[in-house]
Amino acid sequence: MYHQKIFRLFIIFVALFRGCFIITGCQSANKNDLQIFRYSETTVISSLDPAFAKNLANIWVVHQLYNTLVETDRNAMIIPSLAKSWQISDDKKEILFNIRNDVYFHDHPAFLMGKGRKLTARDIEYSFSRLMDPKTASPGAWIFQGRIDSTSPFKAINDTLFLIKLKQPFVQILGVLSNKYCAIVPKEAVEYSALPFRQNPCGSGPFRFFKWEEGQKIILKKNDDYFESDSIGKRLPYLDGIEVSLLQNKSSEFLEFRQHKFDFINDVEPNFKDEILHKNGKLKKEWEGKVVLHTGPYLNVEYLGFLMKGNQADSFLQKKDFRQAINYGIDRKKLIMYLRNSIGNAAERGFIPLGIAGYDSTSAYGYRYDPEKAIQLLKQISFFSIHKKPFFTLSTVPAYADLASFISKELIKIGIELKVDVVPKSILLSQMANRQLSFFRGSWIADYPDAENFLSVFYSRNPSPPNYTRYNNTAFDLLYEKCQIETDLHERIKLYRQMDRIVMQDAPVVPLWYDQVIHLVQPNIQGFHPHPLNLLELRRVKKL
Image (cartoon, rainbow, N blue to C red; front, top):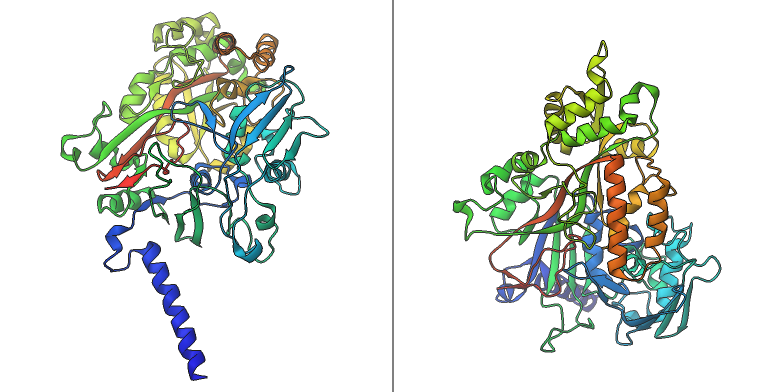
């Protein structure tokens, strides 16, 4: 009995010591030898299952744990990952992927002896089929809907050959496959009843799951068996682990970042922007050398949307001249400077954002601030001649209440009176999806790095989302369908710009700004760069 107690105490001691040594920063001689990247998350992380990677908070952790067939690099280009190469059939309806044979899943109790096994093409077939299965109830099921063969879309030919069959040519399919919904998972771990997969994930990524204390922190450890190496043959990742602190608000995050408890923060809480940044977007002198500011294009467009089939009370919103007047009546450059400290670019060139093929820096079809032109358009539709000018309601969420106030003040200058309705995000999205809002603030973040994804917001056959405005233009639809089968990138860019011009002429939206990634980073972090999809890329990060 005595020996059993001693043994149990020994096991507990070893477990505690191992946990301390690995990640928690216990006071030991080895503390400074460990490279643990620490960041915070104020948005609720709901699942570590890639089938539910529906927001940035989930995506950031999922990106560390799993791999996809292909991925998006820092230049918004598609590059190999699990797939070494691929061949597209002559009719553009089949893609054959050559899969790496040196990739292993992380250790997990679901596997024989708990040891991770080799990833094969059958895991890819399972993962994609699971994503489409209604029983999974994944919010990412739309990824393949209407795009893949209805009978046998996914097929593992052998361990290293995987075939996708499409319903019709869709050249953007590689971009779709880079989405985190398409990360590869092992069937054994998903169906292992003893440990729910959302809380006990298993992938093949550069980091493996260690612990999740709900509401407190998530801890990941280095995957010593990860298949990638750097240019001199050193195995990735460089870091020993990642610690994600789950905080309640952004203010706490910034204060703890100043105390060096976090290695970076994404964006800056509005209350602190003026303390850190000049209105031109540069670091203030007192912060130089203390933090590093990273900015770069972020494939996200912030906009105002009009319901194109509204009720009679909003009849002016149905008039193209009125919608164009609103586009001309907003000083986007002033908005960016005073509300965002110049983080972002005024959306004066169309809906396709800066940083992606299709953006046209020379376009003449966007809208620049021109209040005289706005008033002229309003006169053309006799807006000022009615006995009592109507007011319109702009719906938004609390985080953008200041934006709505700015828009209201801008439009009153051209004679348009706005009422601002601030509602919780979940309610706003529900109302937008159910045609209950005539004028609303929205945004579109790229699901994959192709301008087609942004233009999908206006394709009439798409539901809401993404087509919250219910825009319907036959000429646009024909070009949109043509761009999905055009394999020549230069020709496809021409189509994208034609579509963008049509949308801007009809003005179902008011593009406000093309977003930017903004990171504040501790000076001792090396190899950390912004990503156009704002992915948290940590494989090549070091702490000096």
